Image (cartoon, rainbow, N blue to C red):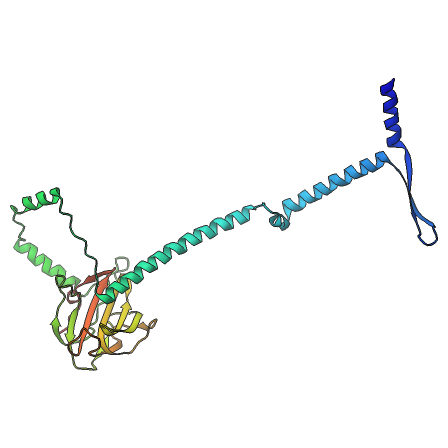
Length: 288
């Protein structure tokens, strides 16, 4: 009985009618009135809440507004973050390569080359002792073949294996060689003596990547060519080109001078570098 009375009492409260009246404040005239019950208010409030939640969910799921919600990360933003990370890694790698390239150019201008020592472990020593007893002198046919190959490759430094295009190297200057390429003396160049003011020419098509004054070697110009080849011209009297200029093979880029501390007279100190290492210019260029 008590439960039934309690249930009826609750039902009565829920279904009990109330009137919501909107009055004119000045005249107290009734404008709008609503008949309400607690049950109607509860049902209407529940439906409104469900609709609000549904609309909010749709907005978050199908509009760009979801990206402004703290802690929410869309697939597009994640992909952009991944792409930016990859780009940052690529830029870092490119920066490291540029640093190594700049260091290589610096070593080139200073004539500094890192030469690694051959390991002298017991295996190498045993191999040396074994080779002493073997005659390694080339036979006559081998000498002839080497000479033929050397003559064919002398003016063919830019050989392209894909399209068979070849380009010869021009002599930067014609004159008398006062000093030649010598690794033992760490003289990675040839010195060509010529009258003061004689034009110095580019050995091949390239780009000027350095054209400045240095205390030790005076006016220096450095060109970058194909396939990692660099040519260096030191002790010039004047420079005809600036950094960033494009030059053609045989084009005048400087003039013979006697600038810098390490010079004893008008001459050209010419170096040829391939992939960061010096090579003997006389193997590719005829200076006389």
